[in-house]
Length: 140
Ligand SMILES: CC(C)(COP(=O)(O)OP(=O)(O)OC[C@H]1O[C@@H](n2cnc3c(N)ncnc32)[C@H](O)[C@@H]1OP(=O)(O)O)[C@@H](O)C(=O)NCCC(=O)NCCS
Image (tube, rainbow, N blue to C red; front, side):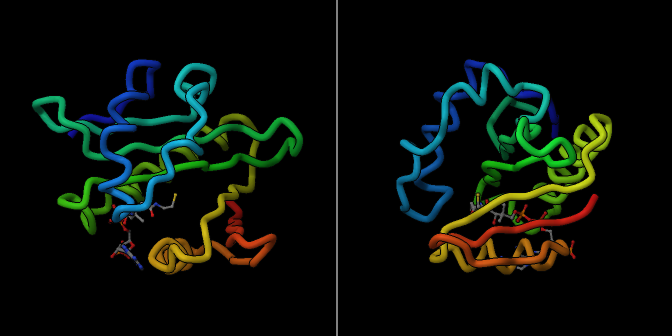
């Protein structure tokens, strides 16, 4: 398993898997392509030894809130779940965020994504329902 920063060419690969990984929900139009180009330091790709995509994380350092970093997307191949991969990616993101003097990580998910709600709670995030989405927050 290899973890590296995202690059522009990863966009198409992520688009190819998203519908399947999100259980049939098509959220592709909501993924800002610029995340792969302008936010490479806070985006990660996990590949297996053959270069097959296993997981990805896309996020950024908030410009508005100087102490905050935001995780926009996290996805793990259904065949590689419950192996700690998403946790590793979150930890990697936290490290970069701390290096930039951020002490809070936030993220959000649709109300229908109950698995994401439970997962974020399991990782110690607090939850608030706001404007039809779950808003997660955690000190790092
Ligand atoms: C949510 C998701 C990213 C979790 O990835 P994962 O690699 O399976 O998670 P991990 O293995 O790192 O989980 C870490 C811990 O959470 C637990 N966990 C995993 N899925 C869970 C769930 N749905 N509810 C509660 N806990 C969960 C694991 O057992 C593990 O526990 P432990 O370390 O205390 O033993 C993955 O299920 C996924 O890609 N889902 C579809 C996309 C999605 O909904 N993304 C989130 C919204 S952007």
